[in-house]
Image (tube, rainbow, N blue to C red; front, side, top):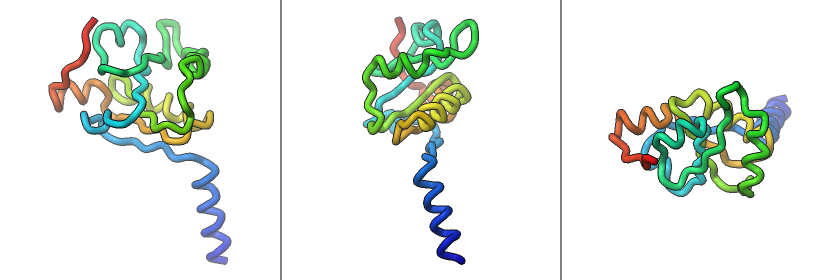
Amino acid sequence: MKKIIFILCFSSCVLFGKISNILATPEALNDVLLIDVRTKEEFKSFHIAGALNVPITTQNGYNADFLNELEALNVDKNKKIAVICKSGARSSAAAKLLDKNGYKDVVNLKGGVERLAKEYDYKFIKE
């Protein structure tokens, strides 16, 4: 019986990916493809160098083209992806959506750009 329960638990972990939720730190930005899911306006005001901007929301609400926009950028589903927003809420939703759609290694950066600015005085790119 214990073996059956273990197999069921292990299988569910393999079948249903788990998103890592880690604090946004400068180190967390290393060796990942960084997806900034803030609006285009937020991204233009300041962003992290090298980040791709694929908004999960627009001024009118949810961005129904989010996955299509990401796929148009030819993002490798096997690459480690870190998702960031202002505080972590939108990036969490985006990370879950990516995981559900076959992206294998997705990390949500909790605290977002606000945490980087406040805790680390991070130097952003300003347009």
